[in-house]
Length: 170
Image 1: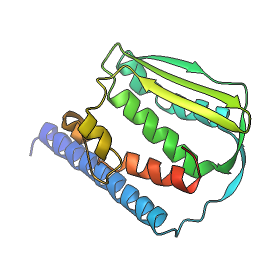
Image 2 (image 1 turned 90 degrees about the horizontal axis):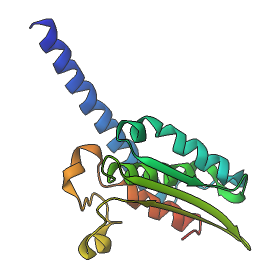
Image 3 (image 1 turned 90 degrees about the vertical axis):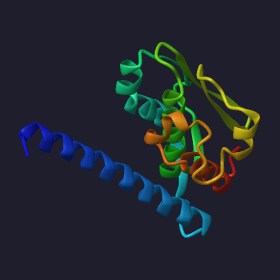
């Protein structure tokens, strides 16, 4: 094969392998979470710092799509929970917000402390969800908007829901 075709085929194989690896990882995580074989390792951590770090991981994505990211975080907000599990939550929610926001749109992340809780909101200017989609959004492998099917596997929000259930969040 010519060098150009070999490179094209290699990139296709690499992309497919990475997608398969992500799918397998998410299936295993969800299975462990559903069967309680993952025991949360709880401790105090700064959720403001964690959110900031997670947001910065997506900088290339929002810059490529010319998305305005509006962030309102307190300097610090300590919570008691499993820091690694909560990172999965933020990464999934941020990934979805950026994925479903059209170029030139906006994603807003806010965090505020109230009494004994911390409230975190992630909003985007995307197209939103139909009522049918909202009913099934936490179902495993469900993808309401199939136009982005290549970018996910329908497990992210099922993972988010399970983690928040374990962490007693809402």
